[in-house]
Length: 274
Image (cartoon, rainbow, N blue to C red; front, side, top):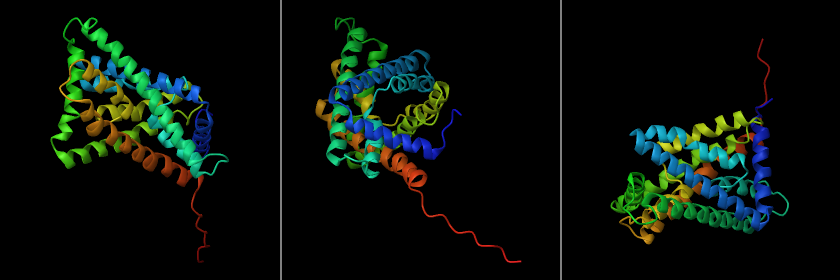
């Protein structure tokens, strides 16, 4: 069968988390770099389609193509390892330590950032004809996103920070569900459909994804966005990373693990009275 039962795919989640903790540093960095780069290209694609058609929902419908590509190729996003690696620690897999999990997160963050920034520079060249002209229409949209989703939150102070954090939580609730979707089927078609649905929801709702933002905000800064690197770090990336961690682990990883792999004691059946 192409569909795996929940207990089976949750076991695969824990196995995957263990594998990522023990993966060689070079492989972790390469896979994270490529994941960040491909997701960045998908973000450009979605923004371009939205700008060209005037219908953002079309961009949201098409954005998951990048997510599906990178997971079918075996690459890793920070939002995915936030969910998978800790499960191996919680499951007490031999040799898995908190230090190993944190190292995995750090390496994937570094690789994702490098890949996303690489594409940010490359697309900025495309948008500005080698920095010889003003950004084209798509470049201007991306620069506007950078300002709206840093200074826009900053304007509201603590309330803005809370909103940003919650949008990060909701984002990785959906994105990590897409990561799990890659494991619930043994066919390519089944994997793609299962991944596509939650990723489309996250993008359509404009939730905050730490890796997508690693592309959007450096791109905006390169093309003259009216905000600073510190604005980006404090008023977007850091709260988004924390929200992504909590959202993915709490609402996807731990819930699936606790109810499908470490299930509660079943109630005893009592015979009915005559």
